[in-house]
Image 1: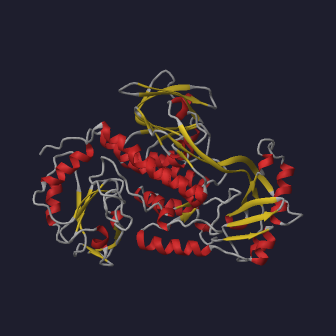
Image 2: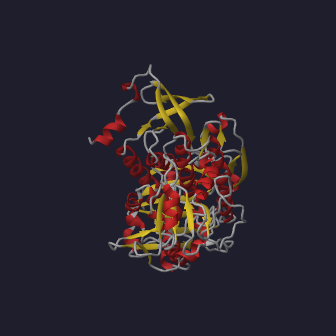
Image 3: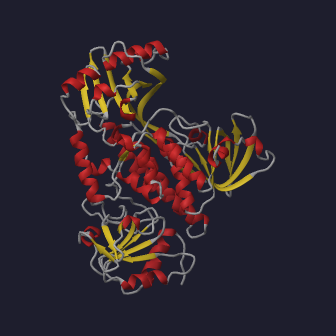
Length: 548
């Protein structure tokens, strides 16, 4: 047993149950958003305790693709290689098929929509250093968990938060270890609730929910069956199965050895359908594949609904909501997990600055101001991608969706933490509120980095080649606030394309002030007469006077 396995196996009863554990941030929920939140907090030096009621990640793949913005966050957290490795064997399985059965779809191959992925990849290569990746969530979560634990994170699984109370100064939780029955009190400065769409903590906090509709109801059947001989080099991502008595979506995993049959529940049966027996699951798998003597190994069957909903608030005192707890959406377009991952990216640095006394508590209010509208846009885009049966259209008369929306690269924040009142301009990549424009840079030593790779997790000033005065402006800030300054387009960091200044919207002596989450906070098209301007702007953003 390695050290990570030993730490996971250690029951809570081994810890003193009569002592209160103190931490800076308590994370409720250990799925992909909670784990990303733990990693983002660790990057900021925040002590975290994560409590997840289940013993391990779900066996169901759930999210299976992470868009460019999600991968940029993973890149900044140092786990991009881990996520890509978790789905390396699936990257060539692209596009979709359709037909009455899998075998018939493979024989006809009528409409492969891999072209949309090709268009997306072309846009990604232009706009991002981290193209989207296909990787099942049930593989990604253990990889993130291992990294977070290796970095010293206190991650407790089989541990359910059964009580959560707060005062003006603290959040106190009682955590029950579900295997031993032992309980323990945890006191934290703040808590982040990411216990999922079905979690109860949001209701206990008194936060209401706006229901935006249900696209469809389904039964997911997860099964193993070696169908590689039928694929014969014709790997795909999804197959739409439709005939009068059967509508489903078949997803391929593990090179044709693991599959998920997403069966649409007819409207007439939605209120009466009982849990499926193993024999009935086998029948449905055979009907979907078109192989009458197939002997699949049924792993699990799960009923669920593709619903859209929004929490009416993202903050209740010292408790914040993230992920599906805050915004539930259909799984289409791959925006659900990506939106939750960006929640964590947005919130972690704000918590860190408040905990370190670098910002006023009001900075945390900008989390809701920024993320709630962004999540609503994602919820609407995702729901529009569903057809009349609730399955994704994927090019089948789908309403037009900008590829930048699919990549989560099109949204512009508006809040007190953004020094701009300009109307959002989708063509202005360097506009304050947008994530910093990407460009490949070459260092003196020949190394190749993206503008997004320059000091992730820190305040950064990115200037043009004549921006030497910006370094002085950063150095004039009083400790402990610090800003890293980089000149782009000179000998130190050559711009490979020569287009970054235009995309950033600055002249050769201008600069962008970039927040720790990679979002542009302020822009100066040219040099400023007084370096103290940076200090004043930053003080307004953080809600704290930064006297020289």
